[in-house]
Length: 88
Image (spheres, rainbow, N blue to C red):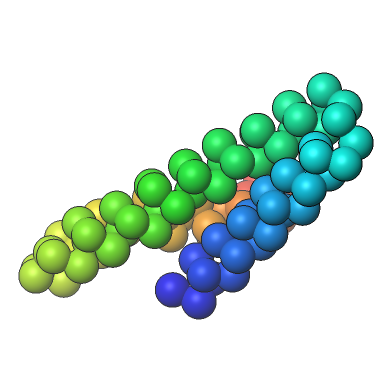
């Protein structure tokens, strides 16, 4: 949960900083980057945080709960591991 809060805070701060940059610079590239970061932030908050809180916490069976969060866990562990450990 702490990791989700940290990632959410970073994404929100990035979007806010790019929003200020869009207001100050008025460059189409900065605007596009701002809109992209805004969509990523909203998507992350919706899919990982809100759906995780609503659906996964309602599951009573521990095996079923693990199966529900397993794709998130495998994504996190595969993104942090190096490619040499996969093939070595």
